[in-house]
Structure formats: C-alpha cells, structure tokens
Image 1 (cartoon, helix red, strand yellow):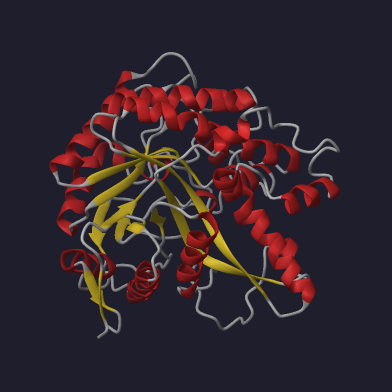
Image 2 (cartoon, one colour):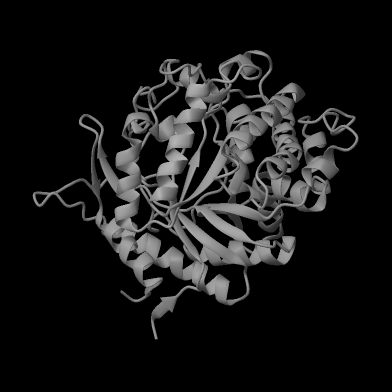
Length: 453
C-alpha cells in the first residue's frame, strides 16, 4: 500500500513571517525595524527591493485567511512585528498594532484555523539595535517585556506560542556571516547575540504561560543535517564541527543546559571567544534557557555535505547534477527522516512540529491561469513521506507547516525566490493557488496521500 495516512489530530498548516508579507511599514504607529534599515541600505538585497509593500497582507489579511480556509488549512503560523507593538522597543504600547493581530486571530478562529504565533521572526525595532541589539543583554530583557504585552493581549485566544524563529539566523547569519540584518561580521557579537536570544526565550516562557493558561509554548530552530563527504577521519571531524556550529550550539543549551564543550574549546582556540570563555553567561542563565517547553519547532530545507576542505564554505554538494531548488539547495527528503530521528534520540522531545519546510521554484501562471509547479508538489510529497516514516518509527511529530503560504519577500534574495504555494503578482497583489496548493488541499481533506502518486 502506497497510501500514507496520518494520525487523527495531526495538524496541517502553512506559515509566513511579518516582514515578508505585511508591508505597511509606515502605518498605524509602526516604527523602523532592522530590516527596514537593512533593505534601504544599497547593496544589501539582491534585487534592491524592500518589504515596504511586500504582499500587502496588512490590508489584505481577510483575503488571505479566506484563501487558507478554502484550502482547508487547519493551522497557520505567523509572526508578530515587534515594531508594531512597542515602537520604542519597550515602554508605550501601540494599541493599533495589537488590534491588527487581534482581528487576525479572531478571523482565523472564525475560519476554524488554529493560530500559532511566533513572537520574533527577525524584525527587531531599530531603536533597540541602536542601543546594542542582540549582543546586548538588555535586548533579552526587552523581549520578555514584549512577550508579556503580546501574550496578555492574545493569550485568551492563542494557545500555541513560539518565542523565536531560528536563533542561528538571528545570531550567526546576521552578526557573523553578515547576510541578514544588521549585517555584521563579528564572531564575539554573534555568539553573545545567540546567547541572549536563547536567554530571552527561557525568561519569556513562564511569562507566556502565566498570560495564556493551558497554552503550548516552544521555540523553532533551523537544522541542517551534516554529512561527511567521505569516510576520511578529517571529513568526519569536519562534519562534527559543522554540526556543532549549526545545530548543537543552539539545541544543547535548550535541552542539556550547556553549550557543547568541543565547540567552546574550538571557538576559544580560534579567538571567537575571549580567554575566559563564555563571559556573556551569567549565573542562572543556562538553567533559564533549559526551561521545560511543550514542543520544538523544526525547520528543515536541506543537508550539508562536509569535507575538511569545504568546512569554511558551509559544505559542498557531492555531485553538481543533484536535484536542487532555485535557492541552490539540494533536494534531500531523506534528511527529514534522519533529522527527526536524531532529534528524537538525542533530545527526548515531548512533541515536535515541522514549522517550516518548502521549496523555491519560479513557475508562473500559464495560458490557463494555472501554476503547474510539479517540482514543488513532488518536493512536498517526498518530505511528507519522510515525516510519516519518522512518525511511524515513534517520533512524536504533531504537525507540518508548509513554507510558505504565499510568495513573498525572501530576505536578502528580495523577490527573486518564490517559496509560496500561492502565486502572488506583486504589481496587482493577485493571488493564485498553485497546483501544489490544490494537491495539499486534497492531502489535508484525506489526512493522507499516495506516496507513489
């Protein structure tokens, strides 16, 4: 039998992020975010674009909720824009911002769609960046204040909370590699930023629980499976280092209350940490970070094949002919199974959600006004199958959120990449569900699919 059925209660959904879809960056009291500053800095975005308008979701949210309802979505993961809620980063609350998200949550619930709220998906208020940003401990304290405001306002209706999306991106990609806002190249700042993001998560969890009784609270990490390019000892060692850099540095503190010792030693030897080591860690921090949570959100897109020679470049694909998305990422659904099994064994998680998984392909409407994105449909089918395999092996997987609902602003890539299952004409804001969305609609309705079809 090639038909794979998912258990009753498994949630099917889709996901977005505020800066990528909302637009309206100057409206209703919203202040500047680090992404507003970054995108308006020449040379930072591939096509020179910004999120000033994006998908105009701020004005078209009812249309987007109706679209999700028509597609049968059971859950929707979205993020709240911190600059809409606390324009000064802390202090005075902007009621217009809270009202927008309250209306959105009410509309979702009316449509029978469960809201999953991500509090931070990268749009730090610029005023906090000017005061030091995530490398400064005060930003962790500001985040707790922000989490308190939002969870007080929405906690009666929202029962699924994610503190942060992808701490690796917030810290390493943004503060050391420099690809994302604020665009720094500073190892010590990146490591301090990562710690303060994790700390802010740990401090915010009990606050959210107090404001939203009975809610599930978790965090989302992005994982890249690290695979040695050969059985050479130096490649195996390099793969272990990449795993520590990308995966263990963020997961270990959450579940073991400690940073991985091998990576601490390596970063100290490389000069990324001072001789004293983790000087940004204060007494009680690690216990706070390892607060008990209800689930882990898992974002998976691809793997990294690592050799000693390619470690600094983040790995290399073993064969140029391998199937890749238009982001250049290898299509490797088996990695989904491998990752879920590894997380289950290493961290003994009570529950997991796939909070992002998807593919960028630029298929556009044809003469029939349909978007025949067969590659994306195949991608989703094969990754769903890998998830089902992990689930049947005992992994407590509770839901799957396809990235993303609609084509949108893809960060440093601008509008050159399309991850949506719904096509967007950015000039007219027309939305057209792609064939992948119509197939997903059927999967949700049948709570399963034909893995061979």
